[in-house]
Image (cartoon, rainbow, N blue to C red; front, side, top):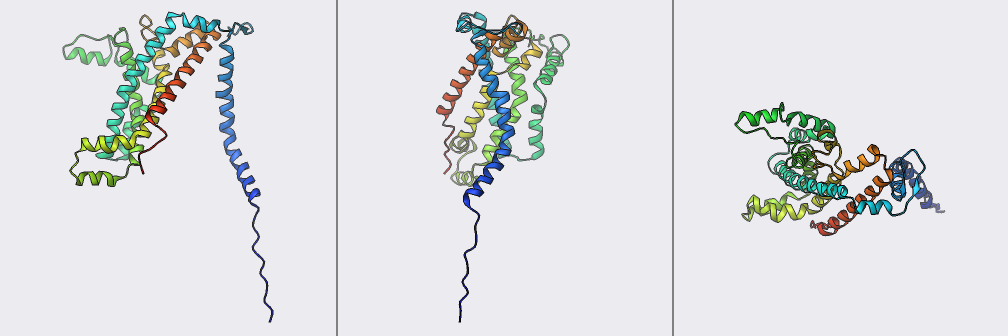
Length: 305
């Protein structure tokens, strides 16, 4: 009696499988990588180079070393624009974060209706330019419906976008109105990752909603909140379009944020070298702020077991 010998099943070589997966991954990554190289990395490197030159599009770039940076340090309008930008960021981030967190918690604790979430997100679907124009009409000192309502209840009309005191807070609130729904949904997604049984256990122990918010929600939401703060701070420092369509930097440079000053230097006065130097300075400021935020908020760590 003979016993038939069975040969082991053949397997594809692991190296060949890995090679095939690597090629497929490269195909999917290639468009994004190409876009990164063409629209981000190359303009960044080009801008850094131009920051050391005098360039106006009409003549070849002339190397001037650190002259643009020396001019920037002694430029009072640059420092004024940076101050205005920081003021805008503080107002925008402070109000937007608190409002978005409140909306997200209410969506999670009271209702999770998809329709309500869609309504909350609606302002974000509008472009900044359109939002700025709409609010410019609403807040017009003479004919705006907002000031008509203020006048109707017995108060004087308020020059929201024409007064140095009101201009930056008004622009910040316009952008809060547009972005708060999107920020709230990001935080709402983070709240969904918190186990519901933790709230149930806290209720059994007699914890109030306020105590559960500070003892459960905030600690476990911290990583998501930290990332959202980093994103919103970076976006706030780059405010431009709302200013461009509402105040154009006025009145008296009261809303001349850094991005608008950079744009005016480059495309209004054709000082591309100086504009590039200010852009590099903004890049350094944002990089430092992002690093500090990431470290201080421990964005890469979570309290969830």
